[in-house]
Image 1 (cartoon, rainbow, N blue to C red):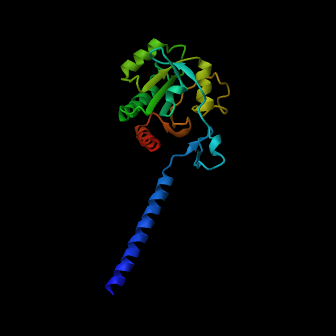
Image 2: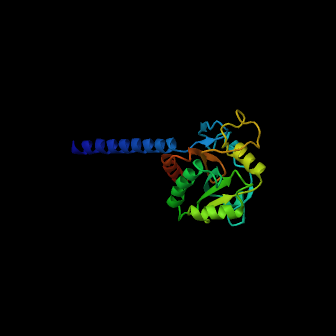
Image 3: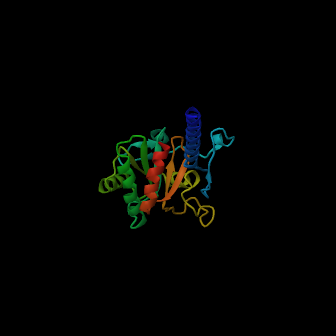
Length: 218
């Protein structure tokens, strides 16, 4: 009788363990970050065996100049998770908030070379290399992790609007690619150039969420 009781106890433990394992597996799928393929930022969960997987939107190639006068291309971010935003050094309100919040991201991953940040100026006619270098120094920006870049206005704006989908008014209230761009969006890019998150860079809680999402990608 005791043997029979032990037998059913073992069966019960095995079934419970299997059930818990399935729940954990299901949970891991649920927290997987989505992909974003268009300017409306509609989240899409696409498995690697899905026919759409190979057509997921990716950030286009680029070449800009950073705060030290060095050329920065997409190769610098190859195989890394990175965060992108758009700013200008004389911005009096939104940009300082975004920069302060991105400093939290820098601090969270200061010893992790797998995580990078890139901030593109939207006023390249004002934000020279020297201006970006002074701004970086004033804001405690670490060149090893955070690139401030300038370049041709048309290239920066095209990348912002057609690759990062950073200007929510583009195609609606904004129709000219040369119209001034200023956005609070901060975009999270994975190791394969794909958009995995979008956040309001002026809100600390949003940056906290992004720090956690970066960990998920890593």
